[in-house]
Length: 260
Image (tube, helix red, strand yellow):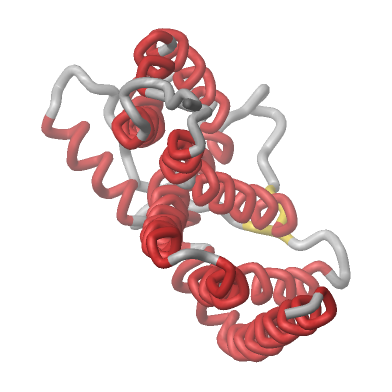
């Protein structure tokens, strides 16, 4: 294929992605009010699954700070005339992009695959499958754990009792989408480590040497994501991230790859 043939093939791939993205976005736009009520705004209520789990755990372990779901409710306000409409559209787009993640990877794969050898295709297929799985797992951790813990702390935090919290819809959605996508990207770290290991950039001795440093950095990262003094909620966020570090160490070669 000539250079322009490659450009034409890439254009076809991008057109298919855009067309499907537009169709899915329109479909989600039509049902977005129901998605908001039952999914996106669910952490605003005290009966959210994670809150009930925390209450059950702390009530059965006497030395843990007691966690209560009673009376917790976050009331959102809208302070800009067009915010609800634009959030309706933007959330439909970002949610469509999340749901289409495997489709986007597959379309990119169809463009790259003809240039790969059979053994390379097998490795890339495995990497794409693992990448999709880890991305959705990260999104789930962000939705069910990281965002609710962050919302619960920040919604109840007061620098002074004379200053009530009035949380805007824009602020809520910015935090929601940021944490969801950040966790999805963080969960791609084992795949990135594996790819760097295959390229000879990373090896297991690196993880062994800097494990103690990584624990400190990851604890700081978990503290930033969930700025709370409660060690229980801190560990809830820290443990999945640290597990990703250990999985990454397991996936890379034991020793550095050297050229002949």
